[in-house]
Image (cartoon, rainbow, N blue to C red):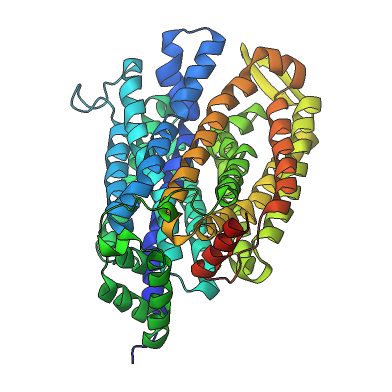
Length: 506
């Protein structure tokens, strides 16, 4: 009798989580290059302030257009090609993006001779990587959720969020190390290239390991390969339990005569295969949760942390070093979430996090509003806090916000999203909610430079307005949680049964 192999489960989780590492690396690598991209690609055009700020935000957030595209097709890719092949496609795109973003002049000019006119080529490569991130962001979570035993699923899915944070922390160290190799002028011309190129290393490792893992049991069942599904389930859960799980999985696909079993690879047109087959409530909840997660402002910290710290009066290398502290706090506070998510449940952690983030963002806005001033140093206008206490307070509040997010909405939303949707619609539902989430990320990332650098808003709020908006969203999220069901320690099939009953009641 086959016994469950925890080492095999760990290997599968580790491999899928490397997708999270690459995800986090690609999303955070841009933080070290924000000022350089402005210097290299935007300033030479000589645009007026509002246009320059908008174009700068567009270049920085360009990958998010790709994320939207990747997420929009992730459901189809996961259904037709599978979770594993989808991740392989993502890895290939991320590899091309890392190379192209670092040398956008490749194939057009000798390496090192790019100028601001290559801004479109740079953005195109970032969009390509964004497609890979959009795929990985859904498929890594989905892969882990579909192989994980119910009793530890929350913990294992949270590992992917931990991996995302680890990828961010890793690139913060890399960016800081590269920035220390030269002065600002070197960083703006050459250093930013090395930051993007460094991503090739984790992407290559991820690609190699993907060739060594199987598809998920639920995808095998959907394609009619029950023997392969049983083999994977047996290695993870043991032979006896695997047979029971296989029957449960088959039931969710077969109880209404899904053509996914009768005609493998053919998308069913039956009612229960449609997005709203289990009612609108599950889709609304599953969509609003990641939207609220984004509009609470975490992307601002991930993308613009060095710019925020420079608003406080720090130099380039000091601002990049500050992002390392952000990464460390994020990593450390993700661990308690992983340990407690299956014990305390999803909703309690989300409530705690929303309260912490609302308070932190509200106070951060007031700190900027009351204490930030602009002075002229060496002929350059520099933002500085009026006291050391104010600067330290702002830094601490950012870390408190990051800690609140990391112990709750960071890892827990990923867990919740992979659980909440029924088997039959999970792929396309996750794709739909991912698209909405990435659009939200684009809105936040694109508008922050406008909100933060607008002369009109700065004159009145000293960079505080944006943070008040994010704090208000956290308050809204706290209220919305009253409508969200708890999913801890339920099998995916039990959660599906809950929504089936709800839809029949209506």
